[in-house]
Length: 273
Image (cartoon, rainbow, N blue to C red):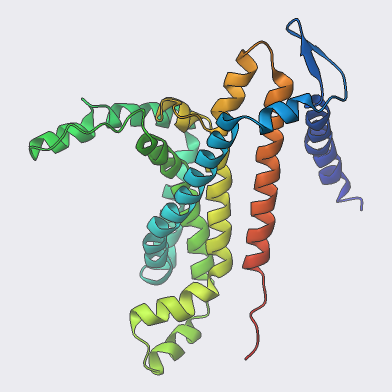
């Protein structure tokens, strides 16, 4: 308990207490641009009855899910190569290289992507050499998705690599000895054995994408708004922090449900046959 106490105190002070205050704040009312403590459910009723709220919720949930699936698919070939095709030293170097993007500000990287995705940017300049384009990628959902991928892909590759590298090689060799080809071995042996790492990587990608504000704002143009953009817009509309708290709590509850379901799926014991 002595060693657990600092972590417990930290979680209570900086997570549990702010979370309870956020819930309490969602029941306050705003009168004459001033917040008044109360226990009035009017903010919940108003926000949950608005079509624009559910539109933003559906868009955020869909884009985060697509990002999680897409990033996992993009990361797997790289993680597989690092886990099975290179030496341990090369793998360590590659993991270090994947960590390097986190040394710089995420906002700076997004500004760099603005230069790349603009209609007169680097990518469209390349397409012009092929007599294609220009394509509109900035201030679109495509731009937002690029930002999500740039944010989460290195992390997912690292998580998948660690999971794949810990697979017992004798099981892979046994599959080959029993006549499994490379593709069948990957689908029936490697992926099930690395299921935990793959699912955890998807969860991290979903969480980061679901709550991200920078990519939808600077690369997606804020239209249509995601829930993070909706929070900003709500707070600007007459100090409506209680309504913004409703949106934030909805996001937190959604992330809790997704995380719990994903962890349960990752560590579910396979049935016996």
